Image (cartoon, rainbow, N blue to C red; front, side, top):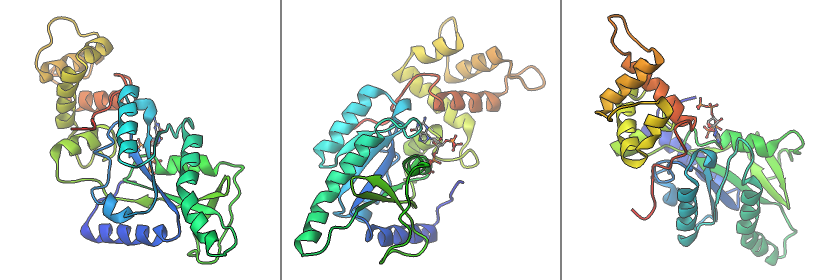
Length: 282
Ligand code: G4P
């Protein structure tokens, strides 16, 4: 489902998350490993405040592994334990649960120091649409997972998924809005699939993508689409790809729309290579 964000929706989302944050010891901030900066909610630090946090770079299978390592280091230096995850295959998920448990420990200790009986540590997932929140929660819920049902102090309807080691996960993620005001961020959100086609122009996004690839990975397009001869303008390249695939409109011209949608899809699937579009320390 695609969400159109208006101020009212943002206020409601923020309130819901702030309410749920009161129930948990740790927030799991889910980002897209290909765009860790662009897929961050602009108000995340104000929303999470001093809530212990684990940063998850999801879809790491599609990102550049070296740049993912640089990002993990960047977050760790900033005081946020971070982990690369592929929620589709489950890679990194155990490490994420371990980190979340560690982050929750001080709160539990403090709680027990006040003479109370041990309680489970609790966490929730937050992130902008399409970073993989549902996939991660479903993976953690699995078939074998036990649900603890309603518990005192928990709004009816909320369920806790047992993660082992005394850690529980709220089954409802916090859905946050993306950054809106920077066209370059908009391009990165569109090209990775974080915003849907109805909102952006695929031909424009594809032109930018081709420009980006020519600068960052010059061989990627020529290799994938067997383009020979000198590399021309972005539009020449799109023409050559479309012609190679037989994407024409009547009159024998290349169908730029169809070609653009096709190239963007291939990019998202990692068929042009594994790329990270955001760099830390910029
Ligand atoms: P959300 O709840 O945060 O909105 O995201 P969701 O889990 O629905 O995941 C969004 C898309 O990302 C899904 O693709 C899902 O399969 C894919 N995805 C999630 N985690 C990973 C991962 O670690 N690696 C890869 N490669 N893909 C992942 P989809 O169903 O095809 O949705 P869409 O692309 O049509 O929106």
